[in-house]
Image (tube, rainbow, N blue to C red; front, side, top):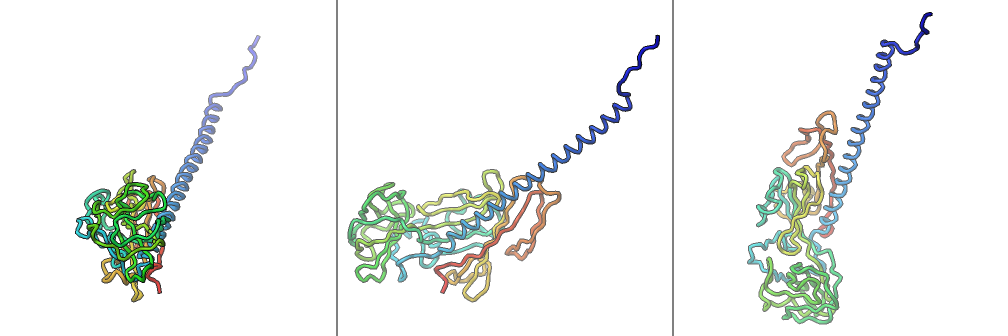
Length: 340
């Protein structure tokens, strides 16, 4: 008796099926890889654009207030210790030096060689400015004699010790109606003190205030900032803010992935010029900022990117040396307190 015929796949059929399966699996894998790469690129671009918009908004908010000095139209009485090595007009002079920049160099501030500025990214621009646009919201208990070194408040200040303050009012027919000093009272105290201490500190308390103040004294916070590019936490270039609001410098990492910053200045004559061409900083009425941002991740594009980006040295394009995503951002900021 013959054996019944056995059903099944031949070796050829198995090999064909396996080959087809491999093609299908390979196609699925390819789709997955393409989708993953597309997702990585989209996510990186989204984060880059968010960082670019935030950086411009943050800079614009402060820069447009440059030189705001409230009631100090005729000048102010500077009680800060100008003989201190950490005192500079660029940091604290609201009247004559509220904005200054450096073209492709880190500048001449006394602390350029320390902190994060010691790692400043070469050939990027730096800008420094100050203003007193932010009110403290504090009120005083009553009149303050011009010889007083302490100003009594109606409640806790909420201020940190060493904060630099601008006070002013228009009482007693004053001509110079403002005083600038460093508050040496303790954190959140119920009074302000202009004792002769701190950095840069104050002049001797025997130096009088500009005038006798009334109960309507206005108390504002001096904001003194310097912006520059240096490596961030992930070692990529980042936008850094150096604050002198409490006299001594404090460095803060603001926005990661800011590869370059180029700044030009509109002067009253009607031309945009680089910082090196500004002969009188009081003639600056607007600031144009161009930022070049870079993604955190590499290998997001097939070829190194090339895009328009105007450098102050005359170069008009940027060409990458890696496969990260790059994008430029630009804004022009009018200095409100310089406009007619």
